[in-house]
Amino acid sequence: QLIDLGKAAASRGYCDEFKGVAAANGVEVTELSTHLQGQLVAVHPAYDESFDGFAAPEVRGNPEARRAWAVDQVKAALTASRNMGLSAMATFSGALAWPYFYPWPQRPAGLIETAFDELARRWRPILDHAEEMGIDVCYEIHPGEDLFDGTTFEMFLDRVDGHARANMLYDPSHYVLQCLDYLENIDIYHERIRMFHVKDAEFNPTGRQGVYSGYAPWVQRAGRFRSPGDGQVDFGAVFSRLAAHDFNGWAV
Image (cartoon, rainbow, N blue to C red; front, side):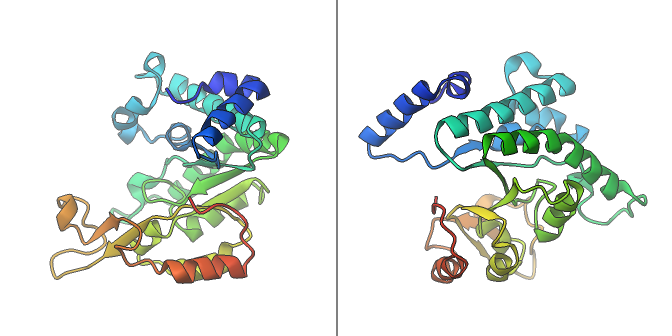
């Protein structure tokens, strides 16, 4: 275990010691991540078994206990982020609507709206705690999450009343694989982009497969992640566009 989250949330001294050890080894603590815990804030029952392994052993098999544990973990990480002197925390939104992302079979009217209402209800107290701590919650916009593109982010943002702490983690690799314009995305959402992860990807459709090629073996997929510089992301353009909008975060 790299960090004791309970101690980090309770003690600035522990956080100072942790950062000191990191700095002595040439490492800067830029952000804490609650991707796995954030995922567990909202889990559709279809994924209960798959995601149970992300939780502490004592809450596995109990969705309500697992969610309560996850919420406590995310809140503790926000407090720890404050104690670390950070400004933002990375996370996933979780997903209640993801099994229905493709409109076939035809969805009952209001299904997606209801799912996003519930997602916002679960996250609002966490966002309010983030405001108390002075920390931005940066959702990694990612397939498999209910917040997987700009449209879904806006749907969520509307339901949390434009909460100032509801922000984005920008990772262009997830946009390449959706055939989404990752440079225009910066122009649209630059005021909400508070984190930037440098990850590459490539999308090479064929006559056999395109965007939905996830069942194929990794090396045979039309879309796959690559090491920076080996994929199709134009990082020169990304850095220029972020600089044009005065992004002052880290490139992680």
